Length: 90
Image (cartoon, rainbow, N blue to C red; front, side, top):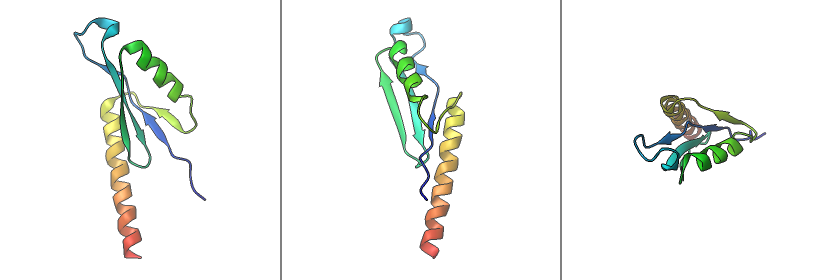
C-alpha cells in the first residue's frame, strides 16, 4: 500500500528593513519525496493566506524554524539514499 506524501511548511521569511507589510515574503514547502519548493509572494498578507490554506491539507505540518526544515530535508535525503542503495542491492 502506498502512503500519502507528507508535506512540511516552513516559516515566513521576508526582507527585514524593507517597507513593512509590503515587503516580498517567501516560505518553503518540503515534501516527503525530498522535493523542496520556494513560494514567493508580493507581501506578507498574501504569503500568510497561502500558507494558512496549505496547512489545512491532509498530512501537512507546520515547521516553526528554517533550520528545523533544513534538518528534516537532510534526514529525508539520507533516508531516500539508503532506500535506493537497498533497492539496488536486491
